Structures are given as C-alpha cells and as structure tokens.
Length: 258
Ligand SMILES: NC(=O)c1ccc[n+]([C@@H]2O[C@H](COP(=O)([O-])OP(=O)(O)OC[C@H]3O[C@@H](n4cnc5c(N)ncnc54)[C@H](O)[C@@H]3O)[C@@H](O)[C@H]2O)c1
Image 1 (cartoon, protein in one colour):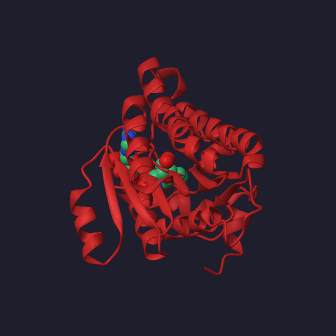
Image 2 (tube, rainbow, N blue to C red; image 1 turned 60 degrees about the vertical axis):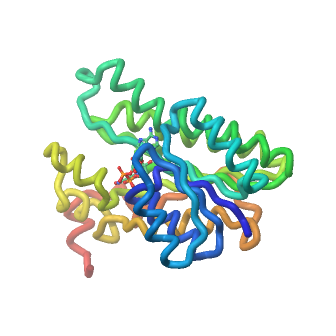
C-alpha cells in the first residue's frame, strides 16, 4: 500500500484530496493545524486507511516530528501533497511585514520544510512524487494580493527547482494551479467584500468556480507514478481556462452557452 501525506486536510481541497487518495487505495496521513479527529473517525468508518497528525506546517520541529513518524511507521511517503495555505487580501501599501511573513511562512516555508524532511527518505529510496498546491495567483498578477501572489509564484519556483534537482534521483515535483474554489477560504475572502460570485463566473471561460474534486483529481493524476511517470516540473492550471483567456468580458460572455 502506498503512503500519501496531505497537509491542510481538515477542510476544503485538502480534505477532499485526502479522501480521494484514500479511495484510490493510498494509506493517507492527514495533517492540519486544526483537529482532525472527527474526519479520521468518519473516513475510517467508510473503510479507508487514514492516520493524522495535528501541527503547524511552518514549524520546523513539527515537520521533523511528522517525518520521523511517517518514516518509523511506513518507511517513507510515496506522495506528498503540500496543500495547506492561507489567503490575504489587502492593498500592497497597507500590508504589514508581519502579515507578509505569516503568508510566506505558511505558503512557502511550510512546503519547503515538508519537501526537505519527507523528501530525504524519498531520495534514499529514489522514488516519490510531490504535488504543491499553488494557484492561478502563482501564474498571473491579481491586485490586492501581494503577499499571497508572491508566495504562490515562489512555490512554483520551488516546484521547478526541485523538479530539476531531484528528477534525476527518482522524485517528480509538480504543482496544480486552481482558479477560485468554493471553500471556506473563498467564503472568508468574499466576506471582506473583495469580489462576488458573478465577478468570478463572468471571468472564467467555463463559467463556474473550480470544485475541490476537480483539484483532487488533478493532484491524483500528477501524484501517480504508475499511470504516468514522466511529468516533472509542471504547474497545471485547474481553472476552466482563466489563465489562457485574455478576452474582455463582453466578448467572453456574448458567446456563452453555459
Ligand atoms: N479557495 C480557493 O479559491 C483557492 C484557489 C487557488 C488555490 N487555493 C489553494 O488551495 C489550498 C487549499 O485551500 P482551500 O480553499 O481548501 O482553503 P481552506 O482555508 O478551506 O483550507 C486550508 C487548510 O489549511 C490549514 N492550514 C492553515 N494554516 C496552516 C498551518 N500553518 N499548518 C497546517 N495547516 C494549516 C487550515 O486549517 C485549513 O484546513 C491553499 O493552498 C490555497 O492557497 C485555493
């Protein structure tokens, strides 16, 4: 049985991804800063093989401890999904150094630490697959998100660098770049009045939000070294065409059948 570690797995994309990978036959270690007990109970009751560890991905002692637990109990992780992340919507000129640092710590330092400590055993075994959850905000500039966008652009830079550094040692490193998804992150962001459902739906060629299941399926595809083992260093948009589309709204919407 292959082992997958999924961060930020207490809700949203992480929980759906953990459950999807478990249904595909992985033993999944869920990790989150929030409690995981009720989710573990629910997933085990469905006959799935899951375990959990609560902690902060930006804490080096926690990540080291998590890696020791995985290595002691399961040998090594076959798959690592760096999904935990936080949003920040604020004008650049009002963003404080503390806000900037928090976003960087969770969205960038965290994935680096997970890659470093879980990657060490993957390197020993010469096999493994890492999928980082970036964003369309890692591929284009979206205003009022300087820290968030910089963290996701940098996460794509980390993905490409590790793909180059570790590809020849049996480890593939890729990223998914979702568009807007209806999760608690979106509810909180919209709660600040930053945008509406209509803003997103009008801008996306496929006229809808991404679903956590869309993202989970893309992660599972990139993670699976048996199905395909030669994709390395890509940042795959899961965005209904958002990044590809430079049309103006009237042009996009006038031909819409959805
Ligand atoms: N929701 C969107 O529109 C959207 C779009 C593109 C990319 N993303 C990315 O997808 C990923 C998942 O987002 P989501 O929408 O499911 O968000 P979410 O807020 O619903 O879930 C994020 C999870 O990460 C956990 N987390 C936060 N800080 C943590 C820390 N320090 N250590 C461990 N866990 C921590 C939270 O507790 C939560 O369970 C994030 O990386 C996000 O940036 C989201």
